[in-house]
Amino acid sequence: MPDALELLKTRRSFKAVELTAPAPTAAEIDTLLTVASRVPDHGKLVPWRFIVFEGEARRAAGAAIVTAFHAKYPDAKPEQAEAERARLARAPLVIAVVSRAAPHVKIPEWEQVLSAGAAAMNLVLAAHALGYGACWITEWYAYDRGVLDALGLESHEKIAGFVHIGRPPGVPEDRARPQLEQIATRYSS
Image (cartoon, rainbow, N blue to C red):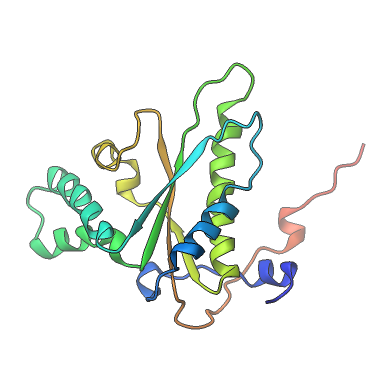
């Protein structure tokens, strides 16, 4: 296994449809979720949780997506609806990171939201460390209340992201990254 810094430098996103079986094993999923939960969490609020979509559950969840899609686009073509139904079946495993941020007397909601984002990033990094490819995406259905209700989210919960995980098709080309002098400054008094 590469050292930690090399691992971090080589992480890349893959398109969800490029990720193939086999999915992570049950033990690997436990490892992914354990690593994902080791993030900064001011006040130990655990302001996030996970929903695992594997096997046929991916298409079953797609039924909620296609129902919401039909409500928005009643004249949609059957092939468009089928594409929506398959949203969570593009990769062998999808894990939703749910933000449970809520008002708190001491901990700002923004910090709680950031903690959920950190959980999603740790999940992506853990997948990479195990040799899987991952893609963290939110699409329209991540913001649709009907879909969120059907997936079992409480009224104050939001999707931080759907992390699609599977075997990568190969080593992706790296994209242009910002030059440090464009994104980093040093404060001086």
